[in-house]
Length: 265
Image: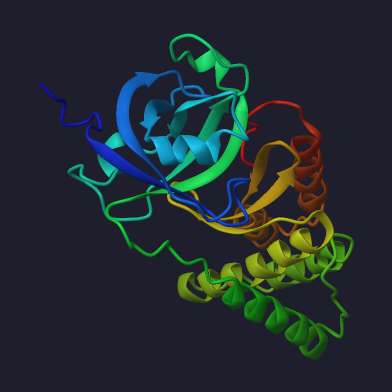
């Protein structure tokens, strides 16, 4: 008998191009036992791969029979075939670099990247509108020059000048809700594009956190950075020093050897 909140049957895992060393392949297999997540309070399952998928995984894992599929905080009910599936079911994949024995979560230490769990063959991956972020960021640079006579660039250092502008905006009164939302979207795009310019990475639509910037850490999972909170705080509190604290947290997470660092918000 199957539980309504435990996935069962076959599944298709689509590693995201640019977010996984597996590239644009599809992994097919079947859901197996639940296991320990890499994050506190998370949920994870093993997927037993079919023979062609094992061949694809063999170069990345000593034992290619299974992958650990970490849902982290995504409820299992949001997976394809489950009662609350609405699309965009993103998970993190781990492989076993040592091999041998029955599946044991402690052996699955090889980070394989982010994947989307698909509902069917031929399903299109969720698109991330990077061009929209680039457009909004360019608008911010133009408006900063026109309205504040400030020359911004796509660099982390230039964020200091951006912080000064945001505190000026706040001192003239917090904008109405709708206008504030638009400001956060535009300035969030500028902050994100500046981080990507200096640190690398890309935008990613996280189903739990929304738009985040993924900053790479080599073979370790990337840091998820969310820029909107610090921008709103600087507008509301008129305190540009909040930027320095936020950037320091990004540096700390980027240089951390923790397998799964906390997101920076």
